[in-house]
Length: 223
Image (cartoon, rainbow, N blue to C red; front, side, top):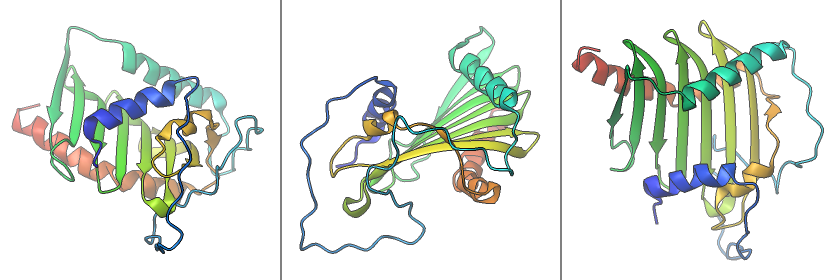
């Protein structure tokens, strides 16, 4: 059954929880043989250890940790600060489900944030975009995949400035069939070991569609 916005809201709350009661383990029928779709992320068996050491930052990412922390701090403020001049809007694109939504915030004529929720078949997507002075600075992708042969959750954080992605981190975990994605909260966000090009492709898988929907709405209303 499709979870919709209620499931995504629950997903966000569970990710922030310090602990969670896990449901009884379930397994897929032994006789049912399934095939993984090409390009779909594979979740190794209970990948990640909450106590694992931090992985090194690959050479293709910025080594300036203060730069990452500055962006993190910016995003925290943008998530919590509200001003009388903020304008908010919501779009229901109906891309996969009538409950798909794109919420955006505008401050003094410039975008400051976009939060998109999509519900493709057997999947939930939660996408966040944050801007400073009109420049896209931070992207977060969360995915919950519910295919019986490849249940899992993953999160990707991408840091940008002047159109250049300078750092990325991610985490992922496998899930039992029917298990909510709270397990990922116990995985450590690690510097992405994948190439910059691959992470850009991850971002571009959704960003152009989200951007077009928001810009069309803003242009239709005169900004």
